[in-house]
Image (tube, rainbow, N blue to C red; front, side, top):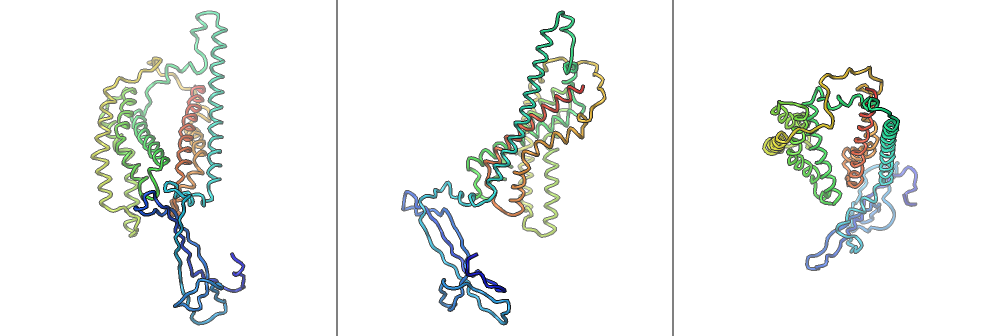
Length: 389
């Protein structure tokens, strides 16, 4: 605070606002100018003549011992300044530069890159070590009988392509995951290019919903291809689950929360007409596109595996601690979460604090790192499971 605000037991009222409007004149002066920035500065003035205020002088102070009524005049001033250095495309930069989280965002990126480098090093070490051992063993073989002997993780080569017990659910989740992955990538890519500006309220969510609806074809295709490779024959059930399982769970959760908002009379509740529009997009566009994708997926030949699956399943030995489901889920989730938790904190903070989130470049980079981390974590977990077999 300024030196004027130094009296003890005194309250100071900021009763004046200086509003500075910055504009940029376009090339064609006949079109006028564009507003590129607006800055507000609160001030305190004790107006001696409220009918003819003079925005100068001492601050508006009220003693803690004051009694009776106090008349306070509130004023404002507006000034316009031509700003040639601020371009129309970069008019949001002065707001973003005022945010104190940029250095933390770079720390988040570095943290994610360290995790990716760690996983990449482990994958490279395992691959090089495995290939080196294989080459060394092949060079030491003296007979064809030794060459035919299987060792290490190659003992399970006849079982690794055996269809899973829940092949239906796996194929459905693969199809829905493909739909969400492509939707997220395209949405963030457009946001980085500046098409989804915060000036256009709701553009990000609208783009995501429209893309999800139009990407029903890849979801149905991927689900059908994998389900056919698993030897499944209930193609109608597969298509229906791909169309309704994951979207139905999300919509049911969304509808229940919206009912609560309706009951509380909140302005955040989605109107009934909007819900009907969402259902129309889902049933009239997304579901038919999913059926079309599934049709082409089932028309394709099943995915051919490089080795033949044994008719008799191999006996599964006793599992180690880290190959059991719960530890595997924890280890497979901690590393990807470590890449995104800082970025997730800022997103949730922006939502709950009603702040603007415009760091789509950081978010897109973190998304790419997340995809790489999930891929490498999957490779490591699969390798450890095969070694344990």
